Length: 97
Image 1 (tube, rainbow, N blue to C red):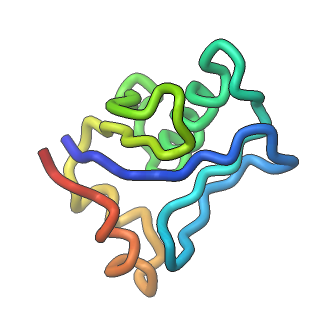
Image 2 (cartoon, rainbow, N blue to C red):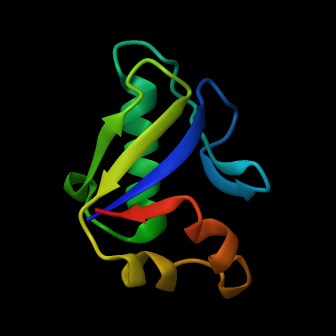
């Protein structure tokens, strides 16, 4: 199991996961109403890392832009789905638990 820290940007015109120097950013088209943006963020993470949606859950930050998601997989599987040039930067936001 790993945890990944992300900043979610709800109500965006795009659905995208990006890596910037200040962290991992998730852009969702869903508004932050009744957990819709959280569910879409979970779906984006699942698609990006090629894991089932049921393997991704919100650990912390239900009502915050700064969130921590748990992904039921191992760190090496996550790293294998990331652009090799970005692995070192990206993995600084991932913690195994």
